[in-house]
Length: 299
Ligand code: 5GP
Ligand code: ZN
Image (cartoon, rainbow, N blue to C red; front, side, top):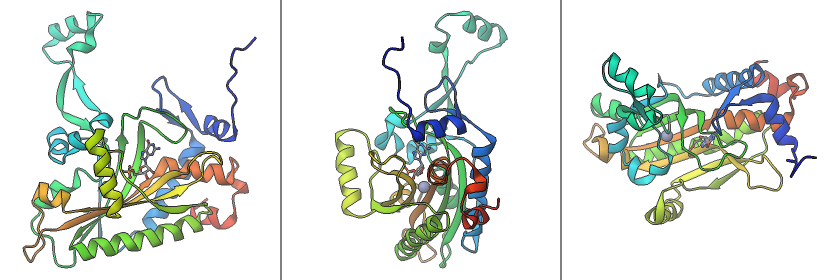
């Protein structure tokens, strides 16, 4: 007789058809069906990219020292994933893996797992000289890792993030963010996604972090586009719209052509969450999705 049988709801069974779990919680193999929607979404986002945007695709790892310098260890140490390797010559490594506690022999490399697609961009922009008067726009993407403590549907440890980033004057960055809060709602409508925009804060660490989150909310630095996944639960953030003010420009010494400190901002699309939201809304059979949505996603 089953003990405490787990009751599966519609979202669970949908997820089970689309994402195959691996032994690591919050880590999935994605099916062809799921990927078809992620690819459609990626091209849809590309078609709405603003002109004169430079494209960069980052690997899932980035420089540890750059992430440290960005202040990540102060703000989000609980989410960080590090790349560690066995070091030594052939005989030494062979001896290490023979040990039961071989993991304790791992040593850190210069790499961490990227927690967001835009972190590696700012030092690169700073290296390329002052920001021109019209500002700079980028289209970046990477697989991201966050050591999440819960693994409800839609909270993955490993997920794909696409971002548009603006570097320029405070006015240019604010206008970029305002434009995208508006445009994102149009995109959600074109995809038939029920949604709402809400002020938000990042999951800063500890007591000081709670103050940082409050200040972020007070200054309206972050908004999210939320999509309902389960009627009885708060809706899920599928996109975010962020003003960093002079945080990254202070760290990386980013200046505008006129010598003023630059500001930065980014718009992030959580591709896996958006795809899940679409399946939740329209079902598993792509042929039954509304024609307009299918056209927008090119299938
Ligand atoms: P943010 O940097 O604003 O926390 O994240 C940007 C976007 O990445 C979010 O709006 C969301 O769509 C996606 N994202 C953040 N955390 C997770 C997660 O744990 N799992 C998944 N699938 N997506 C996430
Ligand atoms: Zn970003």
